[in-house]
Length: 281
Image (cartoon, rainbow, N blue to C red; front, side, top):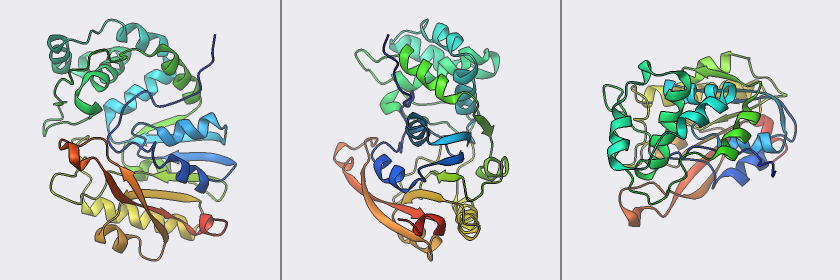
């Protein structure tokens, strides 16, 4: 049987597959502990895991449903697969499952619900309303792969031994105190470049200007402490001001998730790196 390498099992708005080659080039060849406080779809984590670049990993996110999903795929992937196999791609089933209260489900059923909604919902979006309830409409895909057994099992193997934290990015960084032999990748909800460009509503509390400033301060501290770190964000006047003094590059990325088809073209993003990486890159 073919042993599939680890890869993301969730579609994610703002996923890093397009920027992946650039980020991997900036990452150290050997990492003691890898930190990713905004794990999202986990594209960078899974790519580094496939290359066996790190000894340990600390992942985190503010979204408790996402954190439960990663924890349960790590600890009980067979249970998640069993639950996923019960789901069907019909509009009636989708809206019925969307109404379920995740707090009343087992960990495996809760994880399977998120994967199912992600695979069958519109454009793979994860969005909640002010009450924290998932509100993405049905995607109307003909044959979405709801349960990709090989991919889930490969992801579970990659997640073995990882520490997964539900909380603010600061809690994730404080879980292990990153040092010069580690690597940190920061992929926060982006600074919106227009009124309709924000994807910050994937958690009940939006990631606002104060949070962006706290993150910039944290990256500045990592740079002074000679910790290799890379951050991605939208390229705009706000981020240029936030990361003034750190090396950065403007890179194009195609946004596949947009309600307007013609708006899905290349848009500039910023990659910021700390001094520890600037020495060698």
